[in-house]
Amino acid sequence: MAQNLCDVLIVGGGPAGLAAAIALRMRGADVLVADALRPPIDKACGEGLMPDARRDLAALGVDCGPDEGSAFRGIRFANWSDRDPASASADFARGEGVGIRRTVLHSRLVERALEAGVRLRWKTHVALGRDVLLNREGCRYRYLVGADGQASRVRRWAGLDRCSLISKRFGFRRHYRISPMPDYVEVHWCELGQVYITPVGRDEVCVAAVTRHSGTRMQQIMDAIPHLREGLSSKDAFTGERGALTTTRRLRRVVKGNVALIGDASGSVDAVTGEGLAIGFRQAALLGRSLEQGSLDLYAAEHEMTLRMTRRMARALLMMDKHAALRKVVMRTLASSPELFCGLLQVHMGEEKLLHLLLHRGVLEAFDVSASDVERAAP
Ligand SMILES: Cc1cc2nc3c(=O)[nH]c(=O)nc-3n(C[C@H](O)[C@H](O)[C@H](O)COP(=O)(O)OP(=O)(O)OC[C@H]3O[C@@H](n4cnc5c(N)ncnc54)[C@H](O)[C@@H]3O)c2cc1C
Image 1: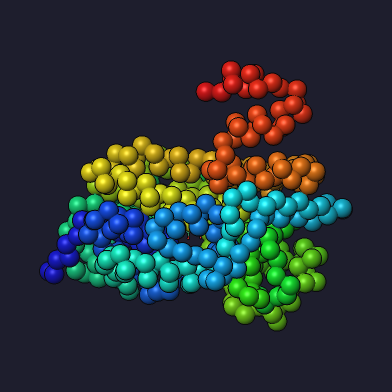
Image 2 (image 1 turned 90 degrees about the horizontal axis):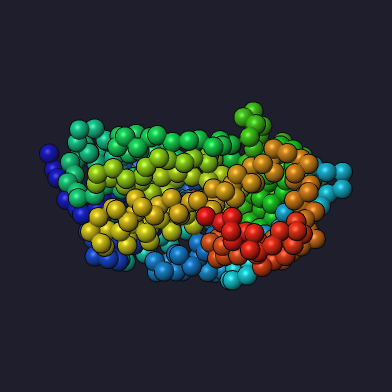
């Protein structure tokens, strides 16, 4: 049986697997990535990279600027489930986001991986049993990284499947030609779920819809939002519908022996957070630092930190999804305080601590709580 040899075998060449391969190769490891599909790999996704994701990609040598897609300056929420529709928007405090077609992002990651010297094997299914086989060829490695997405087989094979599933929803995506282009990512809320619109090209937007109702289709959710029912005609859609599950999942452990999980395989956050890709890139950098120290210990110790705040935000956004009254209150609060909305975005992207936001943006005064009360209560 032919043998492949490498320091690190990465199962899955999606965004997280490729980012990890680049980070490891930049530190001198001999890395082999195997993916069952052929590039560029497409997937149902909102296709928005927030400023934190762009910064982490730039550190890996992947420049995803507006030329690759379309820049956006912040996030706009609109609530259509109330009799008086309300909206609120906030600009990013540091930098711009970029909307980029998933296939373009994948191509840029592949180019950078090749330039860095990563070995890539496409159309290569990895079978996991007593031996690890790449299209029936054997493979010897020091470390194996499971970057094989939410339904990860590596996770089950390594005995890392114990998890809490916090939410499970259904996501869809299509592309439309529109004008004028939005310069925010627009998140439209209604009783059936959310539709978010990301500019991804000169006159192109990615429209993603997420719902907790299993029988509901993308068009039904869009039709529940007057702005989209009138503004987005199905004849302007130029790609077909793609669907995927989106979950919020917390794993007990992400490392066992010489096996580590990364990206959606290692736990996930609901799509409405727009941070799934950013988390994978953050974890790639952490994995690089960990193996540079000669073990997976650092990765095991700090992995949870890469997800914690976004998972909290996911819980809050999912509460808003379920409760119309909460949605109404939050929307009014954000509309009347753009500074608070901007601060929450910073917390979401790890640019600011929640405690700092609470202490310095006047939130506590509104509830007659003093800064020293919070500092005493904080762990
Ligand atoms: C509707 C929707 C909208 C979203 N919107 C956003 C957004 O706007 N912004 C954002 O940041 N995130 C968004 N996300 C989340 C984001 O898409 C995911 O977090 C991201 O794709 C995870 O990347 P990954 O590399 O971990 O996994 P994947 O992209 O799933 O890649 C896994 C790879 O592993 C390969 N593979 C699996 N098993 C094997 C095997 N046995 N052998 C070989 N190869 C294998 C697969 O072929 C695949 O290429 C959204 C998700 C959904 C569903």
